[in-house]
Image (cartoon, rainbow, N blue to C red; front, side):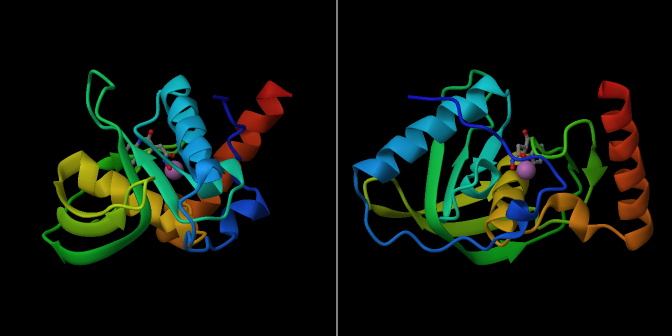
Length: 167
Ligand code: GNR
Ligand code: NI
């Protein structure tokens, strides 16, 4: 297993659109294991393959306190969504920035696991919001890009300032 490098906003590679997985081979299983290790090492609740510069529809999520409930979603599709949630979101690709977005409170997701077995998952609360956040990454969208242009401008200024301080 290996800890992978997580791309940081603004990096153009975060805007690539991920391709569906066609073969469930050993390289997919290795990617999932490495993504899980990377997510746990970074104390994140989710990670999309896009964030580690692999442009395939692969997501790992674990919203449990004990960090023992890994969910792997390959080629995920939202088949039902309802309600409105406003959980504050953060992103490993945009460290230090937390914003609340409008998301569905409940989603029903159809996906495959890393072995190619199909399943459906009904999620609510943080799990639901996290899955929506990760599916945005697969479409090349970072969560702050759903905010108003004014808010995005302010966030870009904050990130530039953080970068200057750390330089
Ligand atoms: O660690 C993360 N926390 C989080 C909190 C609220 C909503 C979504 C997330 S996902 C984020 C990890 C990440 O960047 N995934 O892409
Ligand atoms: Ni993210």
